Image (cartoon, rainbow, N blue to C red; front, side):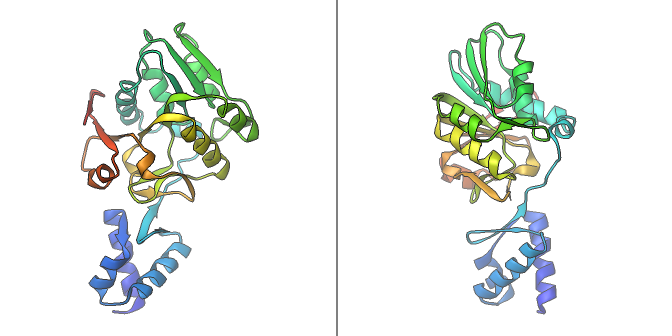
Length: 257
């Protein structure tokens, strides 16, 4: 098989499966794993994949600014949000990260609960302004208009003063091998801080973010306590082996474990 033909076949498998494993490709094409790794390096240079240990994943798509993302797939995000909100218990202190899905989570929280919400997203704080039972704390710092988030050293310092019961994180990509990843290094640094300051990590991810990887690592898969996904075809086995509790958000928003 010619190199170009092999690269095309690998691209096809990435498109269909979302990931490829180097050892399996070597057996399939009857070549060495070194040859496959060279193929994956070439595809990565062209932007068709990102290499991870043992293979490659699809790159995480960039859906643009927060304003643009908020207008996309609102019903799907609302379903995930309702399932995530049901994990929040009365009296907890909760980090809620910036992001369009997390804005939906904030709106889905039970207003009768007494909660302390700590967020780096002013829009989330504003959405909770009519909840008298909520104490809302906004992390300061440099405001990134595109991301709708306060980032930088000040936000990190302030996050380090909080010990949260739960962190509802915004993700760019999540995979059973690569873990949680982000597109921006500053964003990833703040997320890592909030992960370290929290007892429980919750990820609510739309289908297009599953099995993808962004450039900057946030957390290993084993650090995820709850992963909420959409109803549909999803192989939870790899996540379950990492002791991640996977919930499927049904149309009504009730999680099915």
